[in-house]
Amino acid sequence: MRTTLDIPEALLDQVQAIAGAPTRREAVIIALDDYLRRQRLQRVLAAAGTLDLDVDARVIRAAGDRRTRGE
Image (cartoon, rainbow, N blue to C red; front, side, top):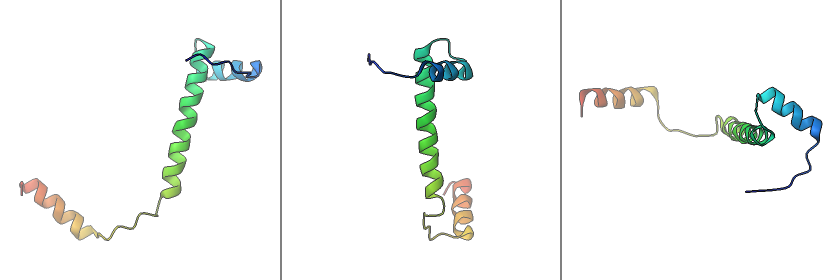
């Protein structure tokens, strides 16, 4: 998809150099991918400790034992 953006040239040049991107297009794609990855990671980290599992170590071990025995 073609889109016209007014991106500061110095910023784009820096991204291209740091990313080692052969083209400006590739630099933008790398930057957008990296941004999305960081945002997803931030959401996962923000959710850390909020999942309430009613399971203890004995239950997990027992489940693992059953799987290794083929039950």
